[in-house]
Image (cartoon, rainbow, N blue to C red; front, side):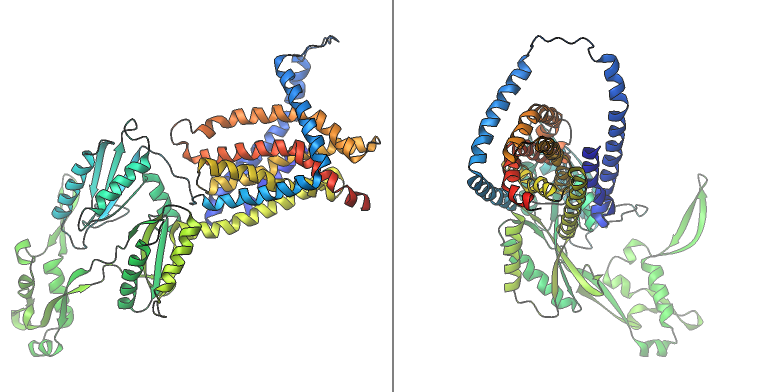
Length: 583
């Protein structure tokens, strides 16, 4: 019961997490909690009942040792010899362990980090954008060209394209935007990241096209979680649009030179051609025409007005009145739009307003009460080193004081979530400490058990570093799982030790005898758990990337936890004997 409550306590703080981390952690914590409670119920009822009927009733005194117990026995003998050596050199053992702990945890800095793991879906999503105002026919031509070049790549099996979007779509895009879903041939493309790099180079060599490549599901998740279809964003804030766009160009150039930062995209750098109609108030007074009349006439001519409906195949269809295409596709045609005046007179728009063209900004967004521009990018390498280099590069730009900048996108969410995960780890450790203290009846032995936790994390960190796995939320869930699972063996070991101490054994003899008795069940339990983790560790099946980091870090953490519980935890226990006597 205590073991189940210990694991359950590690997951209780997950239910209290809010925001993005809460949406991911809460279902996991609730599911795991109910599974643990149900397994406890089965352990207390069905398993004892089944053992009555299925356990052998006849006992024999003849020694019988199969191959399994024999090698387990020899492992136990070897482990006791190692334990005796470690107990004789407790100071050196703890010093070397501390150095290894610091070194292994420092290795995590070199692992790439992201909010969610990369998913190998067998497809890639190429999103592209042309100059604002590009016609549908031109955008379709560029899409055909990209599609043909993609199909010429050996690793590409098929391409599905969409240009623009229908007006009835939930997510509306203009004709200057499009997407291509690239289906990969797994036999010719074992590494989707290599194909992604090839497509990035293809986009870079296509003039007038701004694009990015991502996994379809990953991009949609990134956009729903952080508002950006990319892992990383640099957002500039200010009130002066000219300063913002000038600063965005400088930031784009500086970020493009930072090692480890790839595919820097500035969608705002292409100006939009607009037609400005400036009404002449004096002319309006002279012709006795109101500004509302002019605006209504221009809107009807260029955009159209709904004047009625007809029924076609039992479906209502709107009737739109507007000028023919030939009379609204040029600046000179706009100047000839007829404005109704008094007594049925028609006045050309050119006599009532000044009409000219100008270049304007394609996007004007507002965040936190300020105008904002966002550049997207991808972090390809150590995120901490990349961010440190980028901080230095942006600081060296000496942007105007009225222009502020910050990191957004999934990376910004990752920083916020990282703080919450840290508090969850601390809360889980405190709850586990309380339950162990109740179980063991003192305050020092729970600290001994928890002192081993960082060493379990050491095994997990080494496993993640060796396999070059991303640090993401599934890894955070794995660390929380280790807090509950890895302490169970320590609780059992110290419970046995306490019983032997009550029988009169000293600290060394009691912990040694407890290790001797607990070696076999701990090793068998550990091997059973590792066998269950093998499919996740090897990444078997479709889309294994979601669980592979979790499986790898649990494999390393539980392996280290089992070995260290049998060897290092006794060393810590004996080393704290002086404090135990004082208390």
